[in-house]
Image (cartoon, rainbow, N blue to C red; front, side, top):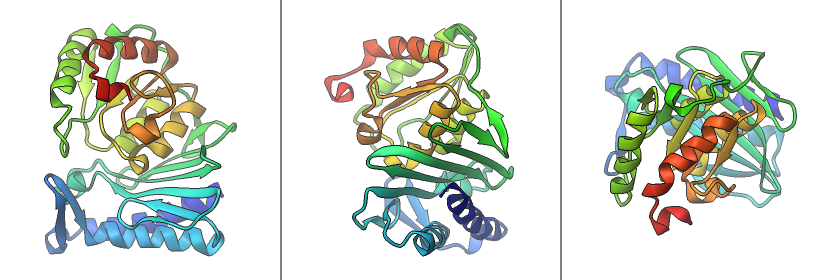
Length: 262
């Protein structure tokens, strides 16, 4: 199944790379404030779905642009272009994210960065890899020495005050915060040890499913803002190596509203 997901990601990458050479000609639609979709998103998603369903016609799909289809204990969770806004600006930080859940549990993961030709993969119980090289989360033990990834609220600003409080505290308690603009890559980079942790509010399953499995298989921890496993449902996620994860959770706790604890 992982090989099929990699094949699907590479098909999508071909479409994305071709379109990146002529961004001015793309048709772009605004889904909601600060949330865009282009014809490339749709074409890449269709290529992924066709590849997956040709191999596994009975499997279910949950995709960003086309929604949920099918009814199966096997469900593919797809973001054909995570970081669309970056892509449309020619900012080279975006990725294809494909995950498979089996009976609700993450089982396979692919995050492919077409600008760097970096392929992150994981299978449950078999470790995480970058271009066939085993990867592990970082070994940093102190939050003060850690580089932390994040994502700013950009669609729903109802939690902006809480996020601003987290950001203010973590700027002072870490070695630095980074916001590149693609949660899929942010999580993959935690798995690869490039950053030591990550947190964000209000993401979707297709943004984080693959990246979360990568981190787990690389020896890291992932949770919602209470440290539990409800992140795919709530969209509120904290991740990191085991020591940084615990300190990151502790740092954001004072800023949690009742809504963020659910």
